[in-house]
Length: 67
Image 1 (cartoon, helix red, strand yellow):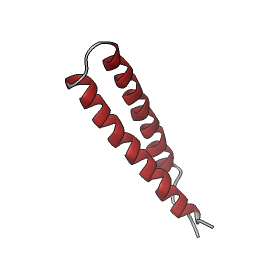
Image 2 (tube, helix red, strand yellow):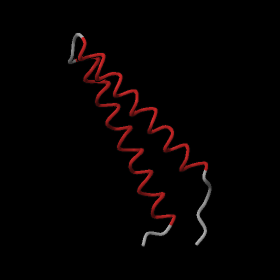
Image 3 (cartoon, rainbow, N blue to C red):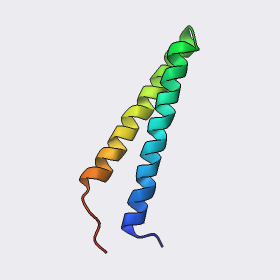
């Protein structure tokens, strides 16, 4: 069984991964794609960016874990 601190660590890694995916997707959509595909990839990228922000906000402001 995972401790609450370890679980928060893995959740924060998911947030970091979402941020990395978002940055790469935004770069690809701006410089490599054209047309409707550019808009789709950019929308998905910004959704990942918002989700990563929510995850990191939750992890940071949920406070320290005791035990």
